[in-house]
Length: 253
Image (tube, rainbow, N blue to C red):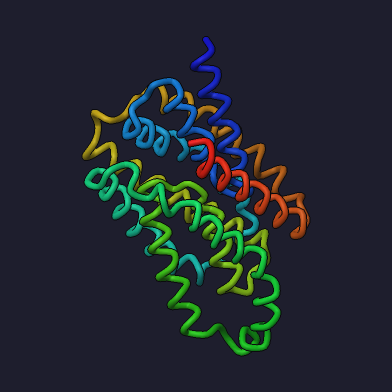
């Protein structure tokens, strides 16, 4: 019973931290590889299983999405197209293609998370007179590229989206987290559908069920916890988990 319990527990933890920060894949993917699942099967099955946690986490943050129609109208299509593109790339490129750059991407995301408030204050006057078209364009392009990354591997995709939106929007951190949850869920869901259509033989449905059950419960727990955190504590948690993720990727893979 150790293996199914460990996979369920990994799914719960991943679902919880995905809602608040992101990087849940860095918990579930190594767990599956540890138990002997091939990397492609682990990546595909993990992606499908984590969709449940994204849905429950997005539901938990539904209040923060109120009034964000403008952002969603621009960013959802970009995320969707990126997610499908990344999922197809996973089936063509070697599974380790992003491994070398993932720590750099996470570090860049953490830098954006830390510097975001200062940049937001500096740009406050501009936002008062309407958002810059350049910023809007950069946000859409960045969301598309992170969608590709999320559909391909997705480790700490949430950290990167929070960093990007912290720099390019005037939204509060909790609002950004709500948007992040919806965008990453769309990416994961479309990538999951793509996998089920073109890579059915690479899906282990027992693993999917265990991760989905754990992640769905974890998403609900993470939403209750995350919405109570102050911006300072939340950014601190993001940085701590991001640094742990970088250390794990660099020294323990």
